[in-house]
Length: 87
Length: 95
Image (tube, rainbow over all chains, first blue to last red; front, side):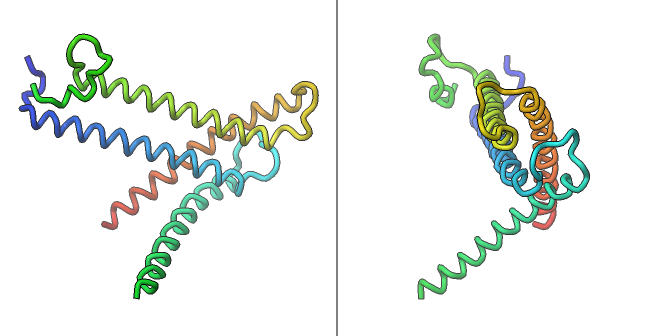
């Protein structure tokens, strides 16, 4: 007996939704890996210390935001460039 | 039963696997891939930060540096994860 009482097309929708959720989670993780890599280079001076101090912590947070801002700036400007070029 | 299950049934042997089991397997695979990515990047970073001119073995200071580096890397990962999540929520609130 079904635990769900969904008909077959509702089941397909629910599975698709689950699949999309997992994919978004995976994309989030991938981005975190990328940001951590890039931002540690910018924020961690020299060799690692015994604790992440508050300045480094703030730097990491800013780094994520500025990276996203940079991405948005580039996307916007590039779009404009392409639109101008098309005429 | 619809044909949705049949995409995954190759190699399953007996009939169709239910999508709940498949979802669990997918989650495990994603978790494994995530751990591998973490280890790969952490190794690269800590090698760069901790090993100067490579010698005959890893000496004590290098070992200690690697251990600290791993801890800091994972602290940073968590910080970045929270920051990214906050930013995403802020962006969503705007829409």
